[in-house]
Length: 156
Image (cartoon, rainbow, N blue to C red; front, side, top):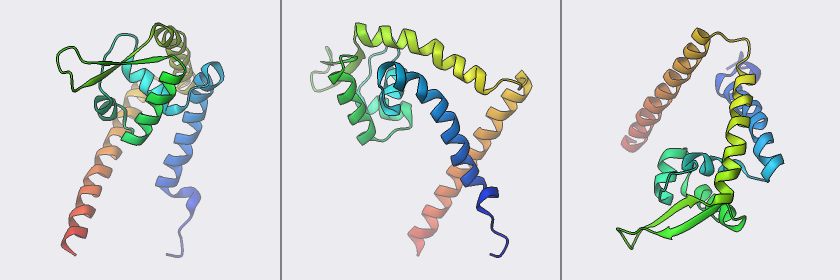
């Protein structure tokens, strides 16, 4: 393909945009509390009052089991997260933020929401809604392509 230009390649641009947005947000929680992206995302999924298992965090966070496991260990080590046995199912461990974790979340949530607002400055509500809808459409297209490619490889 003679006219391929990486700087115009959509998947590359998505990565560039992701990196810029992620760096802006991560600067808030990494500088203030030393959290990794996975630790912050785990904290954000749990919020100040939610109790979930590790597999539920995986399902809600778009992280894999390894990243969630590392995040849990890091949050426990720093005293932000507590692991308990479920009162109704003794085979199940549940995770919740400690008081320290809830306090950190209460500090960080408005700060990251402000970063979100700053990232979207200059976009009208209509443009913000359209941006989310377009990203959702691309995500759905990617999912369909992944399914199709997976089916094609299975038949080879």
